[in-house]
Length: 489
Image 1 (cartoon, rainbow, N blue to C red):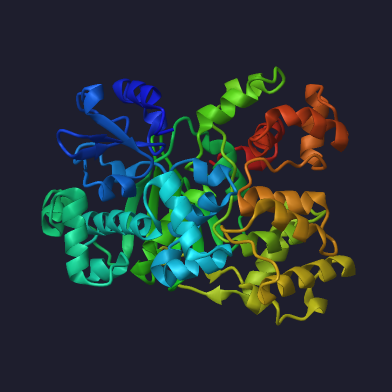
Image 2 (image 1 turned 45 degrees about the vertical axis):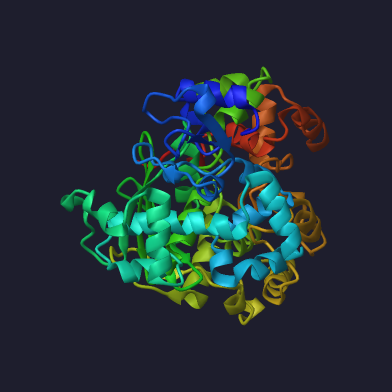
C-alpha cells in the first residue's frame, strides 16, 4: 500500500487507525516517522514519504514519533493472509528465529538462500531480515524499559541485543532518547513489582468481537493447561528458552495481557504467539466487507462484526488435540487431552494457581503406550502416526509452513480426512481461507440459512467468500447456541 501515495495521504489526513501497521509515514522536515493515526497536525503532503515497515523508516534515518509510538502499531495483516516467501519469513522473524538462529537459520527453515531472502524482503519491505529483527528488538527493549524494574544490562540481553553498547545505540537511534530517558518518562506507579511479570496492552484493528474468540478458547480449554478465570483466558506457554503463563482479557480498545516468563528472552516470542492466537493483526473491515457481499452472510456480519479466527500458540499441540476431538463432543475431547496432560505434561508453577502443566511435547507423547489411549484402535493409529511425523520432522506445522503443501501432507496420513486437515489449516497454520464444509455445525447453519447443505454445493457457493472463508466459518458457527460462541460470564 505504501506505493499508493494518494491513498496514504488520505489515510494520514483522516487519521484512519485502520491503516496502522499497513504503512508508516516519514516526515522529511522533522525526520520523524509516525503511524497513520498520529494525533498531531498532519504534515503537508509534499513533506510526507511512506514506507512499508518501521525497519525501513529506521534504515532511512527517521526516528519514532514520541506521541503516536508507531512501534506499538498492530502488525501488518499481510503476513497472516499470505503464504508466499516474504510472509513466511515475516512470521518467522516475529517468532524470534533471526535472534536465535541468525539469517542462515531463517534461510534453512524456508529452504531458500540467504541472498534470495534478503533480495525479496528488501524489494517488498525496504529492509532485510537483520534490520527487521533489529526493529523488533528495539520495540521489545522499550517495553521492558517501561514496564519492568530490570537493569539496563538485563534488558539488553533479554531483548536479544549482543552487547549493551549496541542496545544503547539502537534505542537512541530509534527513539531519540537514551534508555534511562525512556524510563524516566514513565510514571513511578507503573513500575512492575514482580520480576519476570509483565503487564501490557495488545493493540488490534477495530472492530473486534470477543464472543467467539474467547468463547472458543474457554469452551475447549484443557484442564491444567488452560482456564477461564475472572473474565480472562489463561494458559501455559512452551517457549524457546523456558515456559510462561499468560492471562488475556478483552477490553474495548485493546487486549489486556499479563505475562509471567521463566526467561525474559522469550518476551518477543510470547507476545507474537499470543497475537497470533487471538488473530489480532487481522483487518476486520476488509474481511467483513467481502463477506457482506453475500446477502445471506450480511445480516450475520452486521449483527456482530469483527469476528476473529481463534488460533493457537502451539501448532503441534493443536494438531494432537484435533485428532483427540475427532467424532467426539467438546467435553470428551477435553477429557482425553486432560488425561494426556496429567500423564505426560511437564509440570510448571503458576504464580496465581490454577494452571499446572505444559501440554505434552510430541517427543513425550511418542513414548506413551497406545493401548493406554481410551479411543478406538483406528484413532490410536491416527494419533501415533501424527506424533511420529511431528517427532521425526516429516511433518512441519510451524509458522513457516506452506499451507497447501502441509494440508496435502496431512491428507496422506491414516485417519486424516478433509475436516481434520482443514481445521488444522484454519487454526494451527493460520490459513484465512480454510473451509469446513463437512463440519456438522456448518451444515446445520447452512440448512437453517437456506445455503446448500451438501459439502460440494456449499464449497461452490463459498467461492464468493474467498479469501476469507475461515472467517465465514466463524459467522456460520455463531448461529448455533454452542458455548464456543459466547463470552464466558
